[in-house]
Image (cartoon, rainbow, N blue to C red; front, top):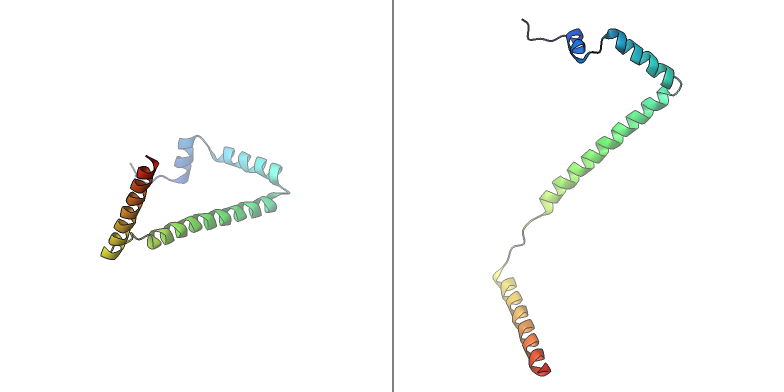
Length: 100
């Protein structure tokens, strides 16, 4: 038994033979005969646009992962934020004391 499957065997598995393929091609030519060049151009343009879209998404993902870095906290920035928090807490406390 050979492990290589040739085209006729592959087509026989799917139930589509040579005669069926010929009929499908003839029907396709009858339906799209005059518009076949236009259909081909449209299919080609669609593939190009699809590939551009996929490449654009890949580029966005790549550039996004390169530009995203976690901000580094320095002692100075931590102290500044602690001061801001303390000032805000004092302002809230003063406001609540004045309201009472």
